[in-house]
Image 1 (cartoon, one colour):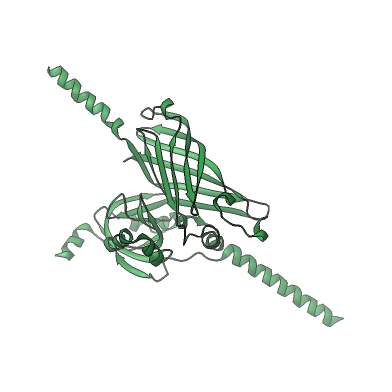
Image 2: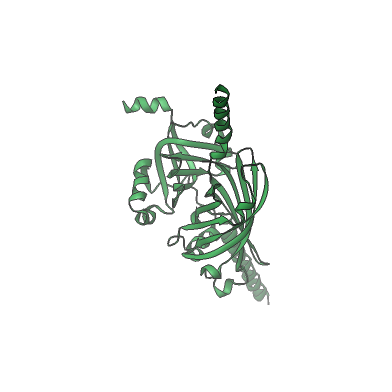
Length: 156
Length: 182
């Protein structure tokens, strides 16, 4: 009889654990951590955009849903409470990178330092190509920023 | 004569702001929402682009399916892989126009109730869409708000039989755009 109770309790315990496990898996599976994920590709904004213009479908297969690290000159930057967006090459149809509100809150001092003309490296998830925005990266994190002047000096 | 020139310059300067014929946003927001007794699905996309032509009332809006962000990572995965199949159909696109455009004047500040009619493409399917929308014009910016329901079946988005009690066929979309002159 005691054995039966023991087995019963054991099964009950297993049941509770697997139910909790399933619950945690479904509702608390962590999101991808772009900041920690190694980029699948490291690329210059100009080449990145050109590849999409050249063959959008092929590029989407190659880059879609992957973490990409992009470097280029900022042509538009706008920082809001609920996020920020940074654009390379061309305000319309360039490489459009957006930062989540949580990233903005955490790295506000670094982000608020970005100016148009700076050479900046970001890492984010590639969502594809849009005919108004160009190549879209979301959930971006800032990797590196060079001041406008120093980026010119480093070229010469 | 001098007076005429001054008048001419003045009128050009005054007319100029109205000549911004196209308005744009690249940070438009779409919230999607579905609730059954089992399950609430909520997601937000803050990377929606739209252009509004105030000369003829034409509107285009587009976004990428992968830009939708869910609270639960697993639901986001299923949304992309099983339902929207975003590897095959990465985009969502609306093309249309304000049907009662002749009745309103977007060069004046105010709140306007309009009807927008056009086509909505999603999951490789294109359907007609008609929705009431509120436009607010205030000091050179235009904000637009609308909400409508999309039937998954209508866009050939399949829900497995065992999940039919958890996921509604009609998904609510709430849309908010803040346009600026282009």
